[in-house]
Structures are given as C-alpha cells and as structure tokens.
Length: 127
Image (tube, rainbow, N blue to C red; front, side, top):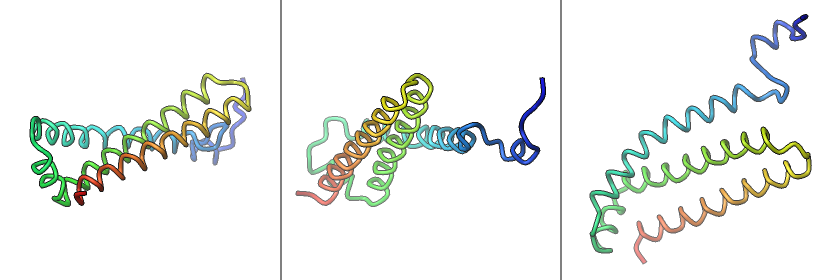
C-alpha cells in the first residue's frame, strides 16, 4: 500500500481534520492539570467540611484559594468540552447532528462555567 502523506505532513502530525495532534495534547495537558487541581480542591473541601458560611468565606477570601478553585472549574470544563467533542465527532456521523451537539456541548460548558465563576465570586467577595 502506498503512503499518501507528504513528508511535511508526516512531520507536522496532522490528520484528516488538520488538528488531531493539538487536540490530543490539549486533552492530555488538561487531564494532568486536573490531577493537581482536583487534589487541591478535594483537600480544600475536606478541610471545610461542616464549616459555617463565615469560615468558608474567610477561606475563599484568600486569593490563592479562589484562584485554584477557579482554575479547577475552568480546566475541568475545558477538559469536559474537549472530551465531549471527541465523543461526538467519533460517534455521530450525521453532519447536522454533529454540529448541533457540538454547539449544545459548548453552550452547556459556557453556562456552567459562568454560573460556577459567579458563585465563586459571590462566595469570595461575600454577599
């Protein structure tokens, strides 16, 4: 069988969609970042188990804690969106259904992200 790729294309590692390698690496980097962020989030939540609102507010008022929780939410949503994109593209073969599901997936991630960051800011800044 004859290889139809040019040497430049082999080097760049581009597949039919011209973005496969980049998507692969973004998904893996997000997964590694989520390991660290999830451990921090889990420790943070366990340390505040049973705490009242004032204690939680004081803990989230620390910039580092708020930043780490915000990053956990954002990286988690990015990872979820990339994973859903991969699933949709692999298993939905009707073009318009593929497009609709990708749009809905992105919209869902944006709505959840905005709501989560709003809640985090409300807790952090008090109110």
